[in-house]
Length: 172
Image (cartoon, rainbow, N blue to C red; front, side, top):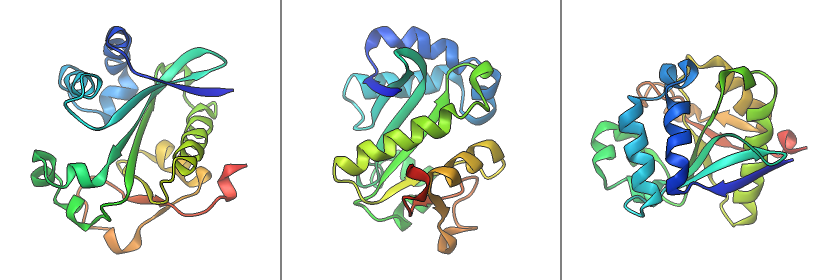
């Protein structure tokens, strides 16, 4: 069973360890910088909502939801000009499995499926995700859940592949 709990200050040490893992280092930025971003979220300086996802009560990874409209007027908009091309009512999702040994076991698919279900129940109908196109494992996971590439944005988003949740076939 997958569940979510908000990230708390006391989780920052756990996240710092995960951020140092090779599978995080490959796709995320500098661990200290990323941890500061998460700390900003926890302390309310960023509207992004960070969570630890758990399987059967055990911490297994990180997932967050960010609000497109809140990022369109920040310093991120200069670094990621494609934010202006997105609908402001949409939300974005990011996730990563905590430990490398938990990769390729369906955990990411299960967590994302449950998280999307939660967001839909909260009333969000436009859910986006933006993996690096070279991260084939992540792209495959997102497709299984029901995310599809946004064709009109291909080639306009730098090192991000913009995908939107489009169908519920992957929700079973």
